[in-house]
Image (cartoon, rainbow, N blue to C red; front, side, top):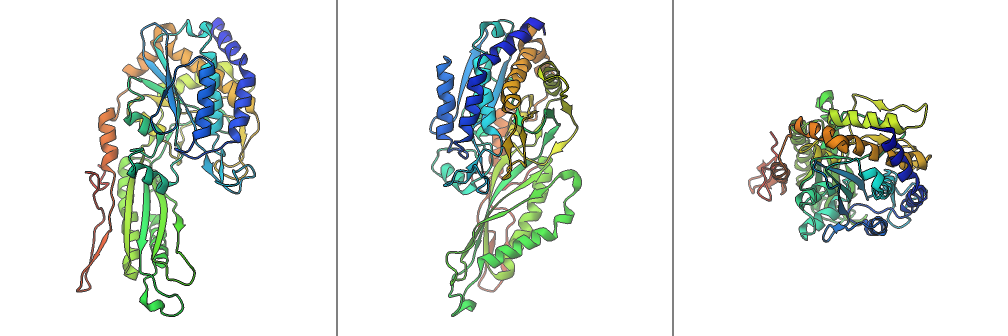
Length: 461
Protein backbone atom coordinates (compact mmCIF):
# COMPACT_ATOMS: atom_id res chain seq x y z
CA UNK A 1 0.00 0.00 0.00
CA UNK A 2 1.25 3.47 -0.86
CA UNK A 3 2.02 5.89 1.97
CA UNK A 4 -0.37 8.35 0.39
CA UNK A 5 -3.25 5.86 0.74
CA UNK A 6 -2.42 5.12 4.37
CA UNK A 7 -2.20 8.84 5.12
CA UNK A 8 -5.56 9.38 3.44
CA UNK A 9 -7.13 6.66 5.60
CA UNK A 10 -5.72 8.03 8.85
CA UNK A 11 -6.72 11.60 7.97
CA UNK A 12 -10.25 10.51 7.01
CA UNK A 13 -10.75 8.70 10.33
CA UNK A 14 -9.16 11.48 12.39
CA UNK A 15 -11.59 13.98 10.85
CA UNK A 16 -14.40 12.13 12.65
CA UNK A 17 -12.53 11.34 15.86
CA UNK A 18 -14.92 13.30 18.08
CA UNK A 19 -17.96 11.59 16.53
CA UNK A 20 -16.41 8.17 17.10
CA UNK A 21 -15.54 8.86 20.74
CA UNK A 22 -18.91 10.50 21.47
CA UNK A 23 -20.66 7.48 19.94
CA UNK A 24 -18.66 5.08 22.12
CA UNK A 25 -19.66 6.94 25.29
CA UNK A 26 -23.32 7.30 24.33
CA UNK A 27 -23.77 3.69 23.19
CA UNK A 28 -22.26 2.51 26.48
CA UNK A 29 -25.18 4.18 28.28
CA UNK A 30 -27.98 2.46 26.32
CA UNK A 31 -27.23 -1.29 26.49
CA UNK A 32 -29.89 -3.57 25.01
CA UNK A 33 -29.88 -7.33 24.54
CA UNK A 34 -30.37 -9.16 21.25
CA UNK A 35 -33.39 -8.31 19.12
CA UNK A 36 -34.22 -5.56 21.63
CA UNK A 37 -31.57 -3.07 20.40
CA UNK A 38 -34.13 -0.45 19.35
CA UNK A 39 -32.35 2.65 20.68
CA UNK A 40 -28.92 1.36 19.69
CA UNK A 41 -29.94 0.52 16.13
CA UNK A 42 -31.74 3.85 15.74
CA UNK A 43 -28.70 5.82 16.91
CA UNK A 44 -26.25 4.03 14.62
CA UNK A 45 -28.66 4.35 11.69
CA UNK A 46 -29.07 8.06 12.37
CA UNK A 47 -25.31 8.60 12.17
CA UNK A 48 -25.12 6.66 8.91
CA UNK A 49 -27.95 8.67 7.39
CA UNK A 50 -26.32 11.94 8.44
CA UNK A 51 -23.26 10.76 6.50
CA UNK A 52 -25.43 10.33 3.42
CA UNK A 53 -25.94 6.57 3.40
CA UNK A 54 -29.11 4.90 2.17
CA UNK A 55 -29.94 2.00 4.48
CA UNK A 56 -31.73 -1.31 4.02
CA UNK A 57 -33.35 -2.24 7.31
CA UNK A 58 -34.05 -5.75 8.55
CA UNK A 59 -37.84 -5.94 8.47
CA UNK A 60 -39.45 -6.38 11.88
CA UNK A 61 -36.19 -6.58 13.82
CA UNK A 62 -33.19 -4.38 14.58
CA UNK A 63 -30.18 -3.82 12.35
CA UNK A 64 -29.44 -2.72 8.80
CA UNK A 65 -26.99 -2.87 5.90
CA UNK A 66 -25.69 -0.40 3.34
CA UNK A 67 -23.59 -0.88 0.21
CA UNK A 68 -20.78 1.22 -1.24
CA UNK A 69 -19.87 0.77 -4.91
CA UNK A 70 -16.40 1.79 -6.05
CA UNK A 71 -17.43 1.65 -9.70
CA UNK A 72 -14.67 -0.85 -10.40
CA UNK A 73 -15.01 -4.61 -10.71
CA UNK A 74 -14.08 -6.80 -7.76
CA UNK A 75 -15.33 -8.87 -4.80
CA UNK A 76 -17.64 -7.53 -2.11
CA UNK A 77 -16.31 -7.21 1.44
CA UNK A 78 -18.65 -7.21 4.43
CA UNK A 79 -17.65 -5.27 7.58
CA UNK A 80 -19.82 -5.79 10.66
CA UNK A 81 -20.55 -4.21 14.02
CA UNK A 82 -22.72 -5.91 16.64
CA UNK A 83 -25.52 -4.03 18.36
CA UNK A 84 -26.35 -6.09 21.43
CA UNK A 85 -25.21 -6.17 25.04
CA UNK A 86 -25.09 -8.87 27.69
CA UNK A 87 -26.82 -9.04 31.10
CA UNK A 88 -24.74 -8.49 34.24
CA UNK A 89 -26.81 -6.77 36.95
CA UNK A 90 -23.77 -6.58 39.28
CA UNK A 91 -21.93 -4.25 36.90
CA UNK A 92 -21.98 -0.66 38.26
CA UNK A 93 -23.12 0.65 34.85
CA UNK A 94 -25.81 -1.96 34.25
CA UNK A 95 -29.30 -0.79 33.33
CA UNK A 96 -31.15 -0.80 36.67
CA UNK A 97 -34.26 -2.35 35.12
CA UNK A 98 -32.91 -4.91 32.65
CA UNK A 99 -29.42 -5.58 34.02
CA UNK A 100 -28.05 -5.05 30.51
CA UNK A 101 -24.52 -3.70 30.11
CA UNK A 102 -21.92 -3.60 27.35
CA UNK A 103 -19.34 -5.68 29.19
CA UNK A 104 -18.87 -7.42 25.85
CA UNK A 105 -17.60 -4.29 24.06
CA UNK A 106 -20.14 -4.42 21.25
CA UNK A 107 -20.91 -0.73 21.71
CA UNK A 108 -17.32 -0.03 20.64
CA UNK A 109 -17.82 -2.11 17.50
CA UNK A 110 -20.72 0.15 16.55
CA UNK A 111 -18.80 3.36 17.32
CA UNK A 112 -15.95 2.02 15.18
CA UNK A 113 -18.37 1.09 12.39
CA UNK A 114 -19.61 4.69 12.39
CA UNK A 115 -15.99 5.82 12.02
CA UNK A 116 -15.43 3.40 9.14
CA UNK A 117 -18.57 4.62 7.40
CA UNK A 118 -17.44 8.22 7.87
CA UNK A 119 -13.95 7.57 6.49
CA UNK A 120 -15.40 5.84 3.42
CA UNK A 121 -17.22 9.04 2.44
CA UNK A 122 -13.81 10.52 1.60
CA UNK A 123 -13.09 10.14 -2.15
CA UNK A 124 -9.36 9.95 -1.40
CA UNK A 125 -9.96 6.68 0.48
CA UNK A 126 -12.25 5.10 -2.11
CA UNK A 127 -10.35 6.05 -5.25
CA UNK A 128 -7.75 3.28 -4.84
CA UNK A 129 -10.34 0.53 -4.20
CA UNK A 130 -12.12 -1.86 -6.53
CA UNK A 131 -15.19 -4.01 -5.90
CA UNK A 132 -17.78 -3.09 -3.33
CA UNK A 133 -18.23 -2.77 0.42
CA UNK A 134 -21.17 -3.74 2.59
CA UNK A 135 -21.44 -2.27 6.08
CA UNK A 136 -23.74 -3.99 8.56
CA UNK A 137 -25.05 -3.20 12.04
CA UNK A 138 -26.16 -6.68 13.09
CA UNK A 139 -28.28 -7.70 16.11
CA UNK A 140 -28.20 -10.57 18.57
CA UNK A 141 -24.70 -12.03 18.68
CA UNK A 142 -24.88 -12.93 22.35
CA UNK A 143 -26.89 -16.15 22.50
CA UNK A 144 -29.01 -15.44 25.58
CA UNK A 145 -32.66 -15.07 26.65
CA UNK A 146 -33.45 -18.33 24.87
CA UNK A 147 -37.11 -18.33 25.97
CA UNK A 148 -37.60 -14.78 24.63
CA UNK A 149 -36.09 -15.70 21.27
CA UNK A 150 -38.14 -18.90 21.19
CA UNK A 151 -41.25 -16.76 21.47
CA UNK A 152 -40.04 -14.47 18.65
CA UNK A 153 -39.53 -17.56 16.51
CA UNK A 154 -42.97 -18.89 17.41
CA UNK A 155 -44.46 -15.57 16.33
CA UNK A 156 -42.62 -15.75 13.01
CA UNK A 157 -40.52 -12.65 13.73
CA UNK A 158 -37.21 -14.53 13.46
CA UNK A 159 -36.11 -17.94 12.26
CA UNK A 160 -32.64 -18.01 13.81
CA UNK A 161 -31.50 -16.92 17.25
CA UNK A 162 -28.22 -15.39 16.03
CA UNK A 163 -28.37 -12.16 14.07
CA UNK A 164 -25.86 -13.18 11.40
CA UNK A 165 -27.72 -16.39 10.51
CA UNK A 166 -30.97 -14.41 10.51
CA UNK A 167 -29.51 -11.82 8.13
CA UNK A 168 -28.05 -14.63 6.01
CA UNK A 169 -31.47 -16.30 5.83
CA UNK A 170 -33.12 -13.00 4.83
CA UNK A 171 -30.70 -12.50 1.94
CA UNK A 172 -29.04 -9.44 3.45
CA UNK A 173 -25.61 -10.98 2.86
CA UNK A 174 -26.30 -12.29 -0.64
CA UNK A 175 -23.47 -11.31 -2.96
CA UNK A 176 -20.87 -10.96 -0.20
CA UNK A 177 -17.57 -12.71 -0.92
CA UNK A 178 -15.59 -12.26 2.31
CA UNK A 179 -16.11 -10.62 5.69
CA UNK A 180 -14.39 -9.31 8.79
CA UNK A 181 -15.27 -7.84 12.14
CA UNK A 182 -13.12 -6.71 15.08
CA UNK A 183 -14.02 -7.54 18.69
CA UNK A 184 -12.93 -5.55 21.74
CA UNK A 185 -10.21 -6.99 23.95
CA UNK A 186 -7.23 -6.06 26.09
CA UNK A 187 -4.80 -6.21 23.15
CA UNK A 188 -4.58 -6.29 19.37
CA UNK A 189 -4.48 -9.94 18.38
CA UNK A 190 -5.95 -12.74 16.29
CA UNK A 191 -6.34 -16.46 16.94
CA UNK A 192 -7.32 -19.44 14.81
CA UNK A 193 -10.98 -19.46 15.79
CA UNK A 194 -13.47 -20.55 18.42
CA UNK A 195 -15.92 -23.30 19.31
CA UNK A 196 -19.46 -23.69 18.03
CA UNK A 197 -22.55 -24.54 20.07
CA UNK A 198 -26.10 -25.82 20.29
CA UNK A 199 -28.53 -23.86 22.48
CA UNK A 200 -30.82 -25.78 24.80
CA UNK A 201 -34.06 -25.18 26.68
CA UNK A 202 -34.54 -27.90 29.31
CA UNK A 203 -37.93 -28.25 31.03
CA UNK A 204 -38.41 -30.70 33.89
CA UNK A 205 -42.06 -31.60 34.43
CA UNK A 206 -43.27 -32.87 37.78
CA UNK A 207 -46.51 -32.68 39.77
CA UNK A 208 -47.50 -30.01 42.27
CA UNK A 209 -48.55 -30.86 45.83
CA UNK A 210 -48.63 -29.15 49.21
CA UNK A 211 -45.01 -29.01 50.33
CA UNK A 212 -45.85 -29.38 54.00
CA UNK A 213 -49.19 -31.19 54.13
CA UNK A 214 -48.79 -33.90 51.51
CA UNK A 215 -45.45 -33.70 49.67
CA UNK A 216 -45.66 -37.43 48.82
CA UNK A 217 -48.39 -36.55 46.34
CA UNK A 218 -46.03 -34.48 44.23
CA UNK A 219 -43.09 -35.01 41.90
CA UNK A 220 -40.43 -32.38 42.50
CA UNK A 221 -39.28 -30.98 39.16
CA UNK A 222 -36.51 -28.95 40.82
CA UNK A 223 -35.08 -32.04 42.49
CA UNK A 224 -35.23 -33.85 39.15
CA UNK A 225 -33.28 -30.97 37.60
CA UNK A 226 -30.71 -31.20 40.40
CA UNK A 227 -30.33 -34.92 39.71
CA UNK A 228 -29.90 -34.24 36.00
CA UNK A 229 -27.25 -31.60 36.58
CA UNK A 230 -25.37 -33.86 38.97
CA UNK A 231 -25.49 -36.62 36.36
CA UNK A 232 -23.94 -34.28 33.77
CA UNK A 233 -21.24 -33.31 36.25
CA UNK A 234 -20.49 -37.01 36.71
CA UNK A 235 -19.73 -37.44 32.99
CA UNK A 236 -17.54 -34.34 32.55
CA UNK A 237 -14.40 -36.51 32.76
CA UNK A 238 -15.55 -38.23 29.55
CA UNK A 239 -15.29 -34.97 27.59
CA UNK A 240 -12.11 -35.10 25.51
CA UNK A 241 -9.75 -32.15 25.88
CA UNK A 242 -9.43 -31.77 22.11
CA UNK A 243 -13.21 -31.38 21.75
CA UNK A 244 -13.30 -28.31 24.05
CA UNK A 245 -16.74 -29.25 25.39
CA UNK A 246 -18.48 -26.73 27.63
CA UNK A 247 -21.88 -27.17 29.31
CA UNK A 248 -22.88 -24.32 31.64
CA UNK A 249 -26.59 -24.34 32.54
CA UNK A 250 -28.57 -21.75 34.45
CA UNK A 251 -31.92 -22.27 36.19
CA UNK A 252 -34.45 -19.73 34.94
CA UNK A 253 -37.43 -21.12 36.88
CA UNK A 254 -37.41 -23.38 39.90
CA UNK A 255 -40.94 -23.23 41.28
CA UNK A 256 -43.84 -20.88 41.83
CA UNK A 257 -44.17 -20.70 45.62
CA UNK A 258 -42.27 -22.05 48.56
CA UNK A 259 -45.15 -24.10 50.01
CA UNK A 260 -45.76 -26.12 46.85
CA UNK A 261 -43.69 -28.91 45.35
CA UNK A 262 -42.25 -27.38 42.15
CA UNK A 263 -44.20 -28.67 39.18
CA UNK A 264 -41.84 -27.15 36.58
CA UNK A 265 -38.14 -26.34 36.50
CA UNK A 266 -36.59 -24.60 33.50
CA UNK A 267 -32.95 -24.43 32.50
CA UNK A 268 -31.01 -22.83 29.66
CA UNK A 269 -27.59 -23.88 28.45
CA UNK A 270 -25.30 -24.47 25.49
CA UNK A 271 -23.29 -27.47 24.51
CA UNK A 272 -20.10 -26.02 23.02
CA UNK A 273 -17.46 -27.90 21.07
CA UNK A 274 -14.65 -27.54 18.58
CA UNK A 275 -16.43 -29.37 15.75
CA UNK A 276 -19.93 -30.28 14.62
CA UNK A 277 -19.17 -33.94 15.36
CA UNK A 278 -17.91 -33.22 18.89
CA UNK A 279 -20.99 -31.13 19.68
CA UNK A 280 -23.33 -33.88 18.42
CA UNK A 281 -21.65 -36.73 20.30
CA UNK A 282 -21.47 -34.91 23.60
CA UNK A 283 -24.94 -33.43 23.26
CA UNK A 284 -26.30 -36.98 23.25
CA UNK A 285 -24.31 -37.83 26.39
CA UNK A 286 -25.62 -34.75 28.14
CA UNK A 287 -29.21 -35.44 27.10
CA UNK A 288 -28.92 -38.98 28.45
CA UNK A 289 -27.74 -37.66 31.82
CA UNK A 290 -30.45 -35.00 31.97
CA UNK A 291 -33.12 -37.56 31.13
CA UNK A 292 -31.79 -39.84 33.83
CA UNK A 293 -32.41 -37.14 36.41
CA UNK A 294 -36.06 -36.97 35.41
CA UNK A 295 -36.42 -40.74 35.27
CA UNK A 296 -35.02 -41.17 38.77
CA UNK A 297 -37.88 -39.17 40.28
CA UNK A 298 -40.65 -40.21 37.91
CA UNK A 299 -40.72 -36.79 36.29
CA UNK A 300 -40.69 -36.02 32.60
CA UNK A 301 -38.34 -33.77 30.67
CA UNK A 302 -38.65 -31.79 27.47
CA UNK A 303 -35.36 -30.90 25.79
CA UNK A 304 -35.53 -28.29 23.06
CA UNK A 305 -32.40 -28.11 20.92
CA UNK A 306 -31.95 -24.96 18.88
CA UNK A 307 -29.29 -24.21 16.25
CA UNK A 308 -26.55 -22.24 17.92
CA UNK A 309 -23.37 -21.16 16.15
CA UNK A 310 -20.91 -22.94 13.90
CA UNK A 311 -17.26 -23.21 14.98
CA UNK A 312 -15.35 -20.13 13.83
CA UNK A 313 -12.37 -20.83 11.58
CA UNK A 314 -10.47 -17.67 10.77
CA UNK A 315 -9.10 -17.79 7.24
CA UNK A 316 -5.26 -17.82 7.37
CA UNK A 317 -4.93 -15.37 4.48
CA UNK A 318 -7.39 -13.00 6.15
CA UNK A 319 -5.38 -13.31 9.37
CA UNK A 320 -2.32 -12.22 7.41
CA UNK A 321 -4.20 -9.17 6.15
CA UNK A 322 -5.18 -8.26 9.72
CA UNK A 323 -1.58 -8.57 10.91
CA UNK A 324 -0.19 -6.55 8.01
CA UNK A 325 -2.72 -3.75 8.50
CA UNK A 326 -2.09 -3.66 12.25
CA UNK A 327 1.63 -3.15 11.68
CA UNK A 328 0.79 -0.06 9.63
CA UNK A 329 -1.50 1.71 12.11
CA UNK A 330 -0.66 0.62 15.66
CA UNK A 331 1.21 3.11 17.85
CA UNK A 332 4.96 2.74 18.03
CA UNK A 333 6.01 -0.01 20.43
CA UNK A 334 2.67 -1.87 20.23
CA UNK A 335 2.70 -5.30 18.63
CA UNK A 336 -0.01 -7.42 17.08
CA UNK A 337 -0.24 -10.94 18.50
CA UNK A 338 -0.96 -13.79 16.15
CA UNK A 339 -1.56 -16.98 18.13
CA UNK A 340 -2.60 -20.51 17.30
CA UNK A 341 -5.17 -20.54 20.07
CA UNK A 342 -8.75 -21.74 19.69
CA UNK A 343 -11.20 -19.92 21.98
CA UNK A 344 -13.91 -21.72 23.96
CA UNK A 345 -16.27 -18.81 23.44
CA UNK A 346 -18.76 -18.94 20.57
CA UNK A 347 -19.85 -16.40 17.98
CA UNK A 348 -22.19 -16.38 15.02
CA UNK A 349 -19.25 -15.12 12.97
CA UNK A 350 -18.59 -18.86 12.81
CA UNK A 351 -21.74 -19.22 10.70
CA UNK A 352 -20.24 -16.93 8.07
CA UNK A 353 -16.88 -18.73 8.24
CA UNK A 354 -18.63 -21.91 7.10
CA UNK A 355 -19.50 -20.32 3.75
CA UNK A 356 -16.91 -17.57 3.06
CA UNK A 357 -13.42 -16.42 4.14
CA UNK A 358 -13.66 -14.40 7.37
CA UNK A 359 -11.52 -13.10 10.16
CA UNK A 360 -12.49 -11.80 13.59
CA UNK A 361 -9.44 -10.31 15.28
CA UNK A 362 -9.33 -8.25 18.49
CA UNK A 363 -8.65 -4.59 19.24
CA UNK A 364 -7.17 -3.50 22.57
CA UNK A 365 -8.52 -0.82 24.85
CA UNK A 366 -10.59 -2.59 27.51
CA UNK A 367 -9.82 -4.14 30.89
CA UNK A 368 -11.61 -6.46 33.29
CA UNK A 369 -13.37 -9.78 32.76
CA UNK A 370 -15.36 -10.21 29.56
CA UNK A 371 -19.05 -10.44 30.54
CA UNK A 372 -18.01 -9.59 34.09
CA UNK A 373 -18.86 -6.80 36.53
CA UNK A 374 -15.45 -5.08 36.24
CA UNK A 375 -15.29 -4.80 32.44
CA UNK A 376 -14.57 -1.24 31.30
CA UNK A 377 -12.99 0.82 28.54
CA UNK A 378 -9.54 2.16 29.42
CA UNK A 379 -8.45 3.61 26.07
CA UNK A 380 -11.37 4.58 23.83
CA UNK A 381 -9.12 6.08 21.18
CA UNK A 382 -7.12 2.86 20.79
CA UNK A 383 -10.31 0.80 20.94
CA UNK A 384 -12.31 2.77 18.38
CA UNK A 385 -10.28 5.39 16.47
CA UNK A 386 -7.16 3.29 15.88
CA UNK A 387 -9.46 0.35 15.28
CA UNK A 388 -11.32 2.24 12.53
CA UNK A 389 -8.00 3.07 10.85
CA UNK A 390 -7.02 -0.60 11.13
CA UNK A 391 -10.22 -1.87 9.54
CA UNK A 392 -10.17 0.62 6.68
CA UNK A 393 -6.53 -0.33 6.09
CA UNK A 394 -7.54 -4.01 6.01
CA UNK A 395 -10.21 -3.10 3.49
CA UNK A 396 -7.67 -1.21 1.40
CA UNK A 397 -5.26 -4.16 1.40
CA UNK A 398 -8.09 -6.40 0.20
CA UNK A 399 -9.60 -4.12 -2.45
CA UNK A 400 -6.54 -2.09 -3.49
CA UNK A 401 -4.50 -2.90 -6.62
CA UNK A 402 -7.63 -3.98 -8.50
CA UNK A 403 -8.80 -6.06 -5.49
CA UNK A 404 -5.98 -8.50 -6.21
CA UNK A 405 -5.66 -9.71 -2.60
CA UNK A 406 -9.38 -10.26 -2.12
CA UNK A 407 -9.65 -12.15 -5.43
CA UNK A 408 -6.78 -14.45 -4.42
CA UNK A 409 -8.33 -15.16 -1.02
CA UNK A 410 -11.75 -15.96 -2.51
CA UNK A 411 -10.19 -18.18 -5.19
CA UNK A 412 -8.18 -20.11 -2.59
CA UNK A 413 -11.08 -20.70 -0.17
CA UNK A 414 -13.05 -23.96 -0.05
CA UNK A 415 -16.36 -23.42 1.79
CA UNK A 416 -17.69 -26.09 4.11
CA UNK A 417 -21.25 -25.30 2.95
CA UNK A 418 -23.16 -23.28 0.43
CA UNK A 419 -25.54 -20.77 2.04
CA UNK A 420 -28.52 -23.01 1.30
CA UNK A 421 -26.85 -26.16 2.63
CA UNK A 422 -25.69 -24.39 5.78
CA UNK A 423 -29.17 -23.10 6.61
CA UNK A 424 -30.64 -26.53 5.89
CA UNK A 425 -28.06 -28.06 8.20
CA UNK A 426 -28.93 -25.56 10.91
CA UNK A 427 -32.60 -26.41 10.51
CA UNK A 428 -31.79 -30.10 10.97
CA UNK A 429 -30.58 -29.39 14.51
CA UNK A 430 -34.01 -28.41 15.80
CA UNK A 431 -35.36 -30.99 18.22
CA UNK A 432 -38.06 -30.90 20.88
CA UNK A 433 -40.58 -32.97 22.79
CA UNK A 434 -40.95 -34.97 25.99
CA UNK A 435 -38.23 -37.59 26.23
CA UNK A 436 -39.95 -40.12 28.53
CA UNK A 437 -43.19 -42.07 27.99
CA UNK A 438 -44.52 -43.75 31.14
CA UNK A 439 -46.68 -46.82 30.61
CA UNK A 440 -49.41 -48.08 32.91
CA UNK A 441 -47.31 -51.17 33.57
CA UNK A 442 -44.60 -49.00 35.11
CA UNK A 443 -42.28 -49.30 32.13
CA UNK A 444 -40.69 -46.04 30.96
CA UNK A 445 -39.63 -45.63 27.33
CA UNK A 446 -36.85 -43.10 26.74
CA UNK A 447 -36.25 -41.19 23.49
CA UNK A 448 -32.92 -39.41 23.21
CA UNK A 449 -34.16 -37.10 20.43
CA UNK A 450 -37.58 -35.91 19.36
CA UNK A 451 -37.85 -34.35 15.93
CA UNK A 452 -39.44 -31.00 15.10
CA UNK A 453 -39.57 -28.73 12.05
CA UNK A 454 -38.58 -31.53 9.70
CA UNK A 455 -35.17 -31.86 11.32
CA UNK A 456 -33.16 -34.96 12.16
CA UNK A 457 -33.35 -34.51 15.91
CA UNK A 458 -29.90 -33.10 16.21
CA UNK A 459 -28.05 -36.08 14.76
CA UNK A 460 -25.03 -34.37 13.27
CA UNK A 461 -22.59 -36.20 11.06
